[in-house]
Length: 194
Ligand code: SF4
Image (cartoon, rainbow, N blue to C red; front, side):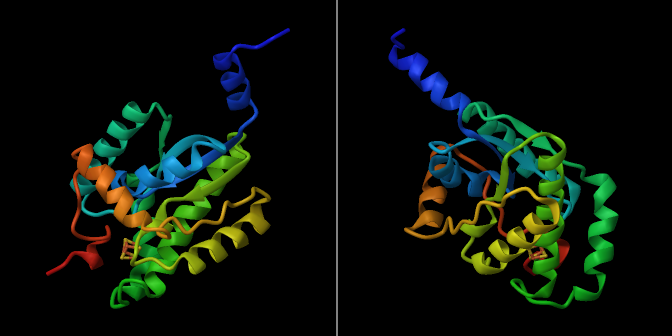
Protein backbone atom coordinates (compact mmCIF):
# COMPACT_ATOMS: atom_id res chain seq x y z
CA UNK A 1 0.00 0.00 0.00
CA UNK A 2 1.34 3.41 -0.95
CA UNK A 3 0.37 6.44 1.13
CA UNK A 4 -0.10 9.87 -0.42
CA UNK A 5 1.51 12.96 1.15
CA UNK A 6 -1.46 13.93 3.33
CA UNK A 7 -1.86 10.34 4.56
CA UNK A 8 1.83 10.30 5.50
CA UNK A 9 1.40 13.60 7.39
CA UNK A 10 -1.68 12.26 9.20
CA UNK A 11 0.19 9.11 10.17
CA UNK A 12 3.12 11.17 11.49
CA UNK A 13 0.65 13.29 13.52
CA UNK A 14 -0.82 10.11 15.05
CA UNK A 15 2.59 9.05 16.33
CA UNK A 16 3.52 12.41 17.84
CA UNK A 17 3.66 12.54 21.62
CA UNK A 18 0.74 14.29 23.28
CA UNK A 19 2.06 17.44 24.94
CA UNK A 20 0.15 19.53 27.47
CA UNK A 21 1.48 23.07 27.13
CA UNK A 22 0.86 25.39 30.05
CA UNK A 23 0.11 28.82 28.54
CA UNK A 24 0.62 32.02 30.52
CA UNK A 25 -0.79 34.34 27.81
CA UNK A 26 -1.37 34.58 24.06
CA UNK A 27 1.75 36.68 23.44
CA UNK A 28 4.02 34.09 24.96
CA UNK A 29 2.57 31.02 23.25
CA UNK A 30 3.05 31.95 19.58
CA UNK A 31 6.76 31.26 19.18
CA UNK A 32 6.69 28.12 21.40
CA UNK A 33 3.91 26.68 19.19
CA UNK A 34 6.15 27.11 16.15
CA UNK A 35 8.97 25.27 17.90
CA UNK A 36 6.90 22.47 19.43
CA UNK A 37 4.43 21.67 16.67
CA UNK A 38 6.89 19.64 14.55
CA UNK A 39 7.60 17.27 17.38
CA UNK A 40 4.41 17.19 19.45
CA UNK A 41 0.66 16.99 19.24
CA UNK A 42 -0.05 20.11 21.34
CA UNK A 43 -2.95 20.89 23.65
CA UNK A 44 -2.87 24.26 25.40
CA UNK A 45 -3.67 24.55 29.11
CA UNK A 46 -4.54 28.03 30.37
CA UNK A 47 -4.16 27.83 34.12
CA UNK A 48 -3.26 31.09 35.81
CA UNK A 49 -4.83 31.85 39.21
CA UNK A 50 -1.97 34.35 39.61
CA UNK A 51 -3.66 36.83 37.24
CA UNK A 52 -5.57 39.64 38.96
CA UNK A 53 -8.07 41.14 38.70
CA UNK A 54 -10.45 38.65 37.08
CA UNK A 55 -11.20 41.05 34.25
CA UNK A 56 -7.53 40.92 33.27
CA UNK A 57 -7.54 37.11 33.51
CA UNK A 58 -10.51 36.99 31.13
CA UNK A 59 -8.95 39.49 28.73
CA UNK A 60 -5.84 37.34 28.42
CA UNK A 61 -7.96 34.19 28.10
CA UNK A 62 -9.94 35.72 25.22
CA UNK A 63 -6.74 36.12 23.20
CA UNK A 64 -5.57 32.59 24.03
CA UNK A 65 -8.92 31.40 22.66
CA UNK A 66 -8.24 33.46 19.54
CA UNK A 67 -4.87 31.72 19.09
CA UNK A 68 -6.49 28.33 19.69
CA UNK A 69 -8.97 29.00 16.86
CA UNK A 70 -6.39 30.51 14.54
CA UNK A 71 -3.81 27.77 15.02
CA UNK A 72 -6.39 24.98 15.42
CA UNK A 73 -4.86 23.83 18.68
CA UNK A 74 -7.21 22.56 21.41
CA UNK A 75 -7.43 24.64 24.57
CA UNK A 76 -8.30 23.55 28.10
CA UNK A 77 -9.03 26.16 30.73
CA UNK A 78 -8.06 25.32 34.30
CA UNK A 79 -9.78 26.47 37.49
CA UNK A 80 -9.59 30.13 38.32
CA UNK A 81 -12.01 31.16 41.04
CA UNK A 82 -11.53 27.96 43.04
CA UNK A 83 -7.75 28.31 43.03
CA UNK A 84 -7.43 32.07 43.63
CA UNK A 85 -7.58 31.67 47.39
CA UNK A 86 -4.96 28.92 47.31
CA UNK A 87 -2.65 31.18 45.27
CA UNK A 88 -3.02 34.08 47.73
CA UNK A 89 -2.49 31.77 50.71
CA UNK A 90 0.73 30.29 49.35
CA UNK A 91 2.17 33.68 48.44
CA UNK A 92 0.82 35.79 51.32
CA UNK A 93 4.18 36.12 53.09
CA UNK A 94 5.97 36.90 49.84
CA UNK A 95 4.16 40.11 48.86
CA UNK A 96 7.27 42.24 49.10
CA UNK A 97 9.42 39.95 46.98
CA UNK A 98 10.67 41.50 43.74
CA UNK A 99 9.62 40.05 40.40
CA UNK A 100 11.85 37.03 39.81
CA UNK A 101 12.12 36.32 43.55
CA UNK A 102 10.70 33.64 45.85
CA UNK A 103 7.04 34.54 45.20
CA UNK A 104 7.55 33.80 41.51
CA UNK A 105 9.07 30.39 42.27
CA UNK A 106 5.94 29.46 44.25
CA UNK A 107 3.77 30.87 41.47
CA UNK A 108 5.54 28.77 38.81
CA UNK A 109 5.24 25.71 41.04
CA UNK A 110 1.46 26.10 41.54
CA UNK A 111 0.92 26.35 37.79
CA UNK A 112 3.31 23.55 36.80
CA UNK A 113 1.97 21.15 39.43
CA UNK A 114 -1.60 21.65 38.20
CA UNK A 115 -0.51 21.18 34.57
CA UNK A 116 1.30 17.93 35.43
CA UNK A 117 -1.66 16.66 37.42
CA UNK A 118 -4.08 17.40 34.57
CA UNK A 119 -1.68 15.77 32.09
CA UNK A 120 -1.40 12.58 34.16
CA UNK A 121 -5.17 12.28 34.66
CA UNK A 122 -5.92 12.86 31.00
CA UNK A 123 -3.42 10.61 29.24
CA UNK A 124 -0.81 13.11 28.03
CA UNK A 125 2.75 11.90 27.39
CA UNK A 126 4.66 15.01 28.42
CA UNK A 127 4.12 18.58 29.68
CA UNK A 128 5.84 21.94 29.53
CA UNK A 129 5.19 25.68 29.85
CA UNK A 130 5.57 28.88 27.86
CA UNK A 131 7.01 30.66 30.92
CA UNK A 132 10.66 30.37 29.84
CA UNK A 133 10.10 32.81 26.97
CA UNK A 134 9.96 35.82 29.27
CA UNK A 135 13.19 37.76 29.73
CA UNK A 136 12.05 38.30 33.36
CA UNK A 137 11.83 34.58 34.10
CA UNK A 138 14.71 32.28 34.87
CA UNK A 139 14.49 29.18 32.68
CA UNK A 140 16.88 27.27 34.97
CA UNK A 141 14.45 27.65 37.90
CA UNK A 142 11.49 26.69 35.70
CA UNK A 143 13.24 23.62 34.30
CA UNK A 144 14.38 22.48 37.75
CA UNK A 145 10.82 22.77 39.06
CA UNK A 146 9.49 20.88 36.05
CA UNK A 147 12.05 18.10 36.58
CA UNK A 148 11.18 17.85 40.31
CA UNK A 149 7.47 17.59 39.46
CA UNK A 150 8.31 14.92 36.89
CA UNK A 151 10.03 12.85 39.60
CA UNK A 152 6.94 13.12 41.83
CA UNK A 153 4.28 12.50 39.20
CA UNK A 154 6.08 10.32 36.66
CA UNK A 155 5.14 12.48 33.67
CA UNK A 156 8.15 13.82 31.72
CA UNK A 157 8.74 17.57 31.60
CA UNK A 158 10.07 19.06 28.36
CA UNK A 159 12.84 21.50 29.40
CA UNK A 160 12.90 24.70 27.37
CA UNK A 161 14.49 28.07 26.95
CA UNK A 162 12.10 29.69 24.50
CA UNK A 163 13.77 33.08 24.84
CA UNK A 164 16.98 31.89 23.17
CA UNK A 165 17.70 32.91 19.56
CA UNK A 166 15.52 36.01 19.96
CA UNK A 167 12.50 33.93 20.97
CA UNK A 168 10.88 36.78 22.88
CA UNK A 169 11.32 39.21 19.99
CA UNK A 170 9.88 36.62 17.58
CA UNK A 171 6.82 35.93 19.72
CA UNK A 172 6.11 39.65 20.11
CA UNK A 173 6.35 40.16 16.34
CA UNK A 174 3.81 37.36 15.79
CA UNK A 175 1.58 38.79 18.50
CA UNK A 176 1.60 42.20 16.83
CA UNK A 177 0.60 40.63 13.52
CA UNK A 178 -2.41 38.97 15.20
CA UNK A 179 -3.28 42.11 17.12
CA UNK A 180 -3.02 40.38 20.48
CA UNK A 181 -3.53 42.43 23.64
CA UNK A 182 -0.19 43.10 25.34
CA UNK A 183 -0.34 43.50 29.11
CA UNK A 184 2.06 45.77 30.97
CA UNK A 185 2.49 43.66 34.10
CA UNK A 186 3.26 40.03 34.78
CA UNK A 187 -0.08 39.07 36.32
CA UNK A 188 -0.41 39.17 40.10
CA UNK A 189 -1.64 42.14 42.07
CA UNK A 190 1.88 42.64 43.44
CA UNK A 191 3.37 43.04 39.98
CA UNK A 192 1.02 45.82 38.85
CA UNK A 193 3.24 48.79 38.08
CA UNK A 194 2.41 51.89 40.06
S1 SF4 B 1 5.29 38.53 39.29
FE1 SF4 B 1 4.40 37.06 37.82
S2 SF4 B 1 5.47 35.10 38.15
FE2 SF4 B 1 5.84 36.45 39.92
S3 SF4 B 1 4.28 35.92 41.40
FE3 SF4 B 1 3.46 37.64 40.24
S4 SF4 B 1 2.34 36.70 38.55
FE4 SF4 B 1 3.61 35.09 39.43
